[in-house]
Length: 367
Image (tube, rainbow, N blue to C red; front, side):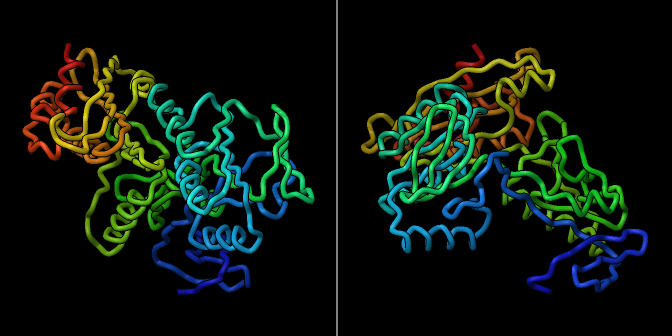
């Protein structure tokens, strides 16, 4: 294990890794696990003090130290994806005035429009300003902090978080002749093996097969990385293990709101050539008669021709992630919409009604 060590290149023909120091390290097998880098806007002023990205724990420590040492009062998050929205809660918890700038019409664009609206409502209810259709044009330093120039005017902040997504770190792989896929990430087979037989890839630098659409996708998530790493290691160790692919299941929390999804949304299903149809219901997390119940909204997507269940998205006060996890299991098992509509789920009033929101949504879509 060599820490603080930079790799300058890989020589597959010689099966050697070249370090920045010039040293060559031979190998029998190579694993590319270079991860992803934050996507940055192509604007001037990104090197100004107080502008951060959040990739790892060290970044988190730097941000927190800056807030305390500079007695920061105003934070602006550029982008409205998972990281940005989760950081809003952290900023507000530290007492910062918080604003989100999003270039699109709403946060988390792959969610239904009404679900995105509920995220905005939750942000605003917790003192976060949300500004949509804002294009950042640059950053300047001022005595009062950082000036953010946008197509809609300027605003000031003490701290700026850039969170507009990530890109796979593939420079070393590409230079070594390791093939990239259509997404721009490293192409791998179901053993996590690249086009170079002794080279493997795992995690945020590589693609995965989507089990619903059957296409190669780039959906970098920590749990996927862990599973791919185990598969690569097992195969290097002499086993014959396959990675089954992903459903794109993901979740995050925005203050008191749970947000989760699995599989394909309606638009993605149609792009995959499927005759997609969807239905959205408003349900409750527990039985209506049980105290403390909270509202949730669930949207199911299915193939209108075959009846195959394709995906789900949900938002709500509680019980959202648990239901999406059930539906992820249904997707993995290849269940039809009708089978989902009659799933034998555990029932008790503290956890759901006798007809769970999953049943109700599936019954509604069957109609």
